Length: 279
Length: 321
Image (cartoon, rainbow over the protein chains, first blue to last red):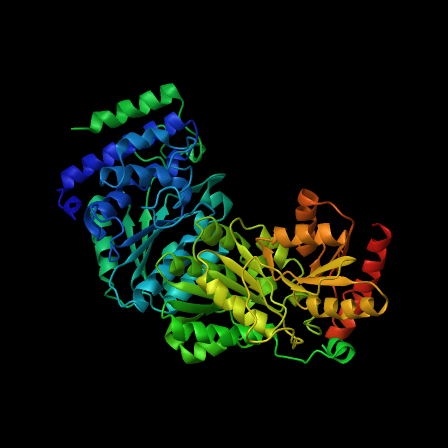
């Protein structure tokens, strides 16, 4: 748990390095999903450096907290975070999406066992997380399961089957994080199928709801720690308002960057912006 | 199935779904990591038997198959051996994306049992009848696909599934099923059971069709045709060796299944025969349609799945030898 002691200023630097890695990885791959990777950076940093109980020297520790990235297309942020947290050799990052690489285009547990689940077909992560939370409950263990979903993803019906189950059965050892960046592949949620009020929906399914700014590290840490404590005897939904493409000015709030890789000049422009933030 | 027992003298046993419920309880007693899930059909799939004895390890999820399959994936990723059941048509058709993404692709150790397979469910009609489940299950890479022919076969295969490391699907049936085996018969995943060593034709059948095939075998014997019957309780991985042996030694094959002819037993056997020892084949199964309400016996007759249809298919294939 040596990774959890960094002060906040360091966490901001870690977040910036992760953004740099995301841009480099997707640029090198020539395809991928930068928008929804960049929006989730602070949430992942908060989890891996302050909230999750884990130990990089024991990746299969039975009592580790579980994290499932249900929005599997955002996996570059997870790979970059795992590299920062010491679970992944950073030299692997440029192999993203290349033949034989453990860094598959969407999370593949067969290729990278440190992942808790394989995902990529949207809507399934909360159900998988419920299975995990029930396993912990059956074994009387106190590890916690976190699942991150996209806001477009919650248009899937299975999300609400799962939300109904977890709320009804009071799975307080389960937390869902909604990366609420308000965009999906085809455009803005409000123009396609707006799930608002997201918090209201989870509340009505008997969840504890915390709404935060998903780029404010302190808010992320507080909310996720509160959720992990499981004090409410309910599952918690952390609704994190984020900006798709956060940190790269020309990508921010532009749905065009959902699933398109930056070209060489765009990578350079993005890195110039991000590297200016580095200490 | 009145027809089968009265015409052929096989003693009637319990439904394979009931045998599943009993075997699941046995597993629960032997292994605390065995858990069960059901989507509001526990009384019909007989998983309720498990729930009664092990309420803490039984998750009834409501009418939400997709969520159930995903939950099974999450449980299996954390050391549990989940058995999830529902009607075959709902489990496979509604849970298919989840079976693929949350189970087959990560290759987790989860088991799925679909009851009410085929049209022999009778009066409830085609919305409840799985006629495509075997094809769908075969489309999941790495899955074992099973269809027991009687209660003893079902019980044994449930135990083999629990011992198998990896995802499995088993179809069970609604009606009481003629007894073919005894409690002492051994079953192995991927190994067909052969009945007789006739050399004129091989009838390769699965599920309820095995009892009709045995009935056809007896009728053919009376007409001077020596047939062997292979109970192909494992559709995948198919017993290619037994299929090739049947093709070589008999020179003609008839398959019989309570399933659409697209992508089921016949299709799997044809693939195997074509690759090993091509011989003429005929196929007994459901012909590109959905059935209707009726008694099981009426439906099996109307949709061409009873012994006389198997005999007729044998006569056709013998002419092509």
